[in-house]
Amino acid sequence: VRSQETKLDRLQAGIERVKSGISFWSEENELIYVNEFLKDFTHNTTGYEMKPGVGRLDFLRHVVNKGLIDYGDKTPEEVHQELMDAIDASPEGTSVEFKTNVEGLQEYWLNTAVRLESGEWMQIVTNITAQKEREEELERLFNGIEKLRNPIFIWDKSNKLFFFNFAAQKINKDYWDIELTRDMPRKLLLEQLDQKGLLTKPDNMSIDEYIGFTKGRMVETTEGITAEYELGADFVLLGDSIALEDGSFVQNFTDISELKRNERLINKQRERFS
Image (cartoon, rainbow, N blue to C red):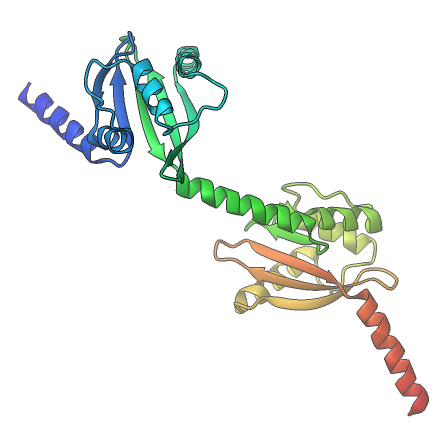
């Protein structure tokens, strides 16, 4: 018994120290337990005292009235019922994102709740602001890359296509009738280019050897490799390939066809007057 009590004491001490809000509620939705983090946060931001016996609806009405949480067109009663329905629908419980606003500072939170066999339920509320901001940054980056005219490829460490933008998809389809797909092996793409006479490599070098050769060159320098690729009549791309720390690599291609045409014209003029 003493051993069990010691374990429970350690568990409670750990729960009190975590930087997430943890609370237990009765089947009648009255508070049984709340850790210091959630109790202090609620009191400091709204003046509400979370103590055993308070009802969850009373709590929700208070934080909404104080402007801490904005549920939009939904009432506290609707928000509460949706959560109850969700945790009753799945033994794994549910997770719901919401936002708080404290003196103009908006933060994102994840509420994970689960119904226990006893009928009581618990929830853990975690601040995910840093993750959401990172997610938004990545989304802006993704949208920007999608709009670029430069074809961009990202290959994973197994030489499978992890990402390609719209420009890469369009050029491969319009010029060479090649359909790019997620997880497409790089070998398959190179084989198709080779069959069309578009892959610049020594005749005695296999596709596998070519892949190993180019990846080896990328690994040798942190600046990556740059090369020109003549891909059909009067169509030239300048490609930059750089290896990443996890073994994947990025390729960025720029259409320099116009520059090469001008270069040829200049060279012809020089030959005429030399």
